[in-house]
Image 1 (cartoon, rainbow, N blue to C red):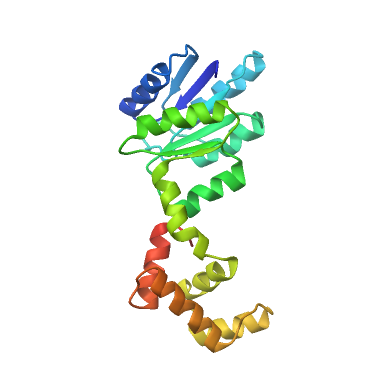
Image 2: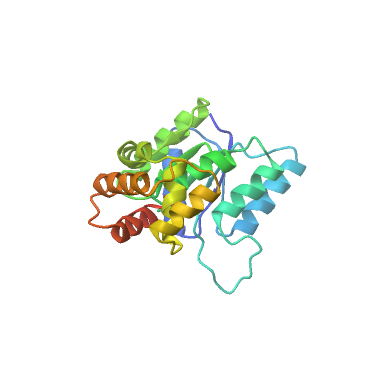
Length: 221
């Protein structure tokens, strides 16, 4: 089990809750807690210099700004910088973020090992994540698995590009011309409308404007 863990969390109540959750697993690691991303990175760098590196980083994504000026203002940037320093560092994100597309991008782009959404049963989910990652598995909390199953399978790169163009103010006719110019298929007016109709039905949207609002809120574009 993990021997040395760093918690990066700007709210003391959450930080103490994470520490208590770790202790309930009946392991006795060294647990360090920091409120700022800059301090987290400094601790990671110092631990490497001392040849006593951290095994696991548990970090939030959002950090409130205050009087103290920070070079690293958020958890996503912290993860990126930490991976540069220690590429094999195991990382769990513990955040209120619940947009699956955003969560998936962190697994893909930064190779995080686990994601737990703050909320109901988050302590149980965090325990499951720590155990899974200790066994060289990845973990995503239950509510986000359900989000993946209900929506992500319906999306393709074509769908995302199509919706991005519409969200940028393109008309369907302009989208058609753009796709033809870029040699992206299907690109006929009827095929574009059929795909949009399918997406509107899938997301129970009454029109394309509402569809765009839903997928933007979910974080797909």
